[in-house]
Length: 275
Picture 1 (cartoon, rainbow, N blue to C red):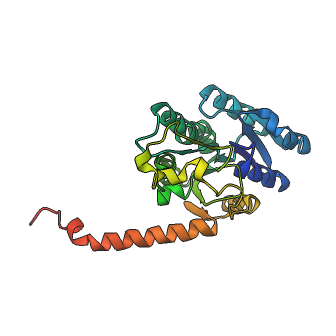
Picture 2: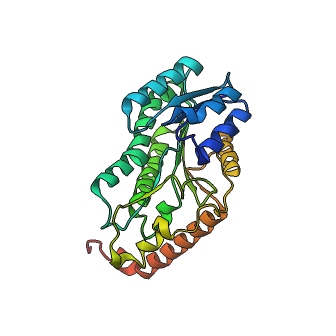
Picture 3: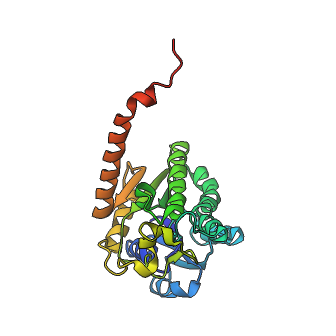
């Protein structure tokens, strides 16, 4: 039995993962900004579930959650940084306050969670961290530049941290595609204003033009099972793509990048100092 600390459990992937972990007999500290959304989990699993309010932009709340995890279960074995939300806008359209809140939640919130659990993981010489990214970090869609940037930053951090922690623990970045959650609905925000010149690029991805919500191909419970298998693996990947759509998109981007790399190879390697 291990103890999981999962952020963003009110709905979606976080909720599915919390339910999967608890059903397997593990302890789970389940968190959300509104603790009342978690009471059914706490009631169903009174011995192994601890429901706690958490806004990942609040460092005092982060410290409290980690302290309560240690008091109740003796520490955290697995941290899952799932809390976050989507934001759509052309780069020029986005409001500065929106951008900073997005990074504070999607990136710096995860950083603060990681730093809060690492001392105990280092002391135990074991632990796993799953950072929930997005295929958006790979494909960088028009209209999702800032959201993609938060996830790309999280992946860059994850890769370095994974190298720093071994053999003290492991880190895996998870890149989901489109899953049947509220992400494209309630959890999706956008800029207050739109610029007409971007109507055919970023504009097509604004919420009022989006028809994806409710039709996503991914099953959240299958994603949760996949994440559990990563933690249980003796050799977890540093990056895991989830969903056929994400897998195909990742492969297409990798192929296109390789083609472009080869096309510009002479320019790239021709910049050395002549002997």
